Image (cartoon, rainbow, N blue to C red; front, side, top):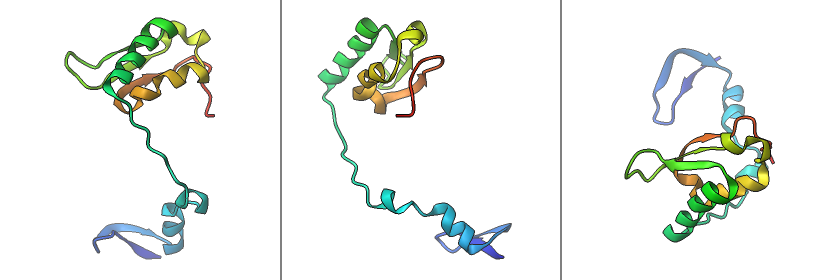
Length: 111
């Protein structure tokens, strides 16, 4: 066993693992290493429209974390029985601003 070495040359005292195990644990599978990710950006108007849609059309609750915050808390509790993957798509425009996401008892899947 070899001591675990951090990128800057530091070691973690008392922590030892097989070098191969450590490498396997941090390497990405080949399909993820080569994956291209397209970042999508939304305008402020699109984000505001999404908030209105979530609250009114879908029946879920989205609100600012606190007055003046740029982050939101989201809960599908009020509509859990009817909330699934399709409804979750409405959250995409504000997804990067969601601090807390409650999908308990919904039909949202890992797909």
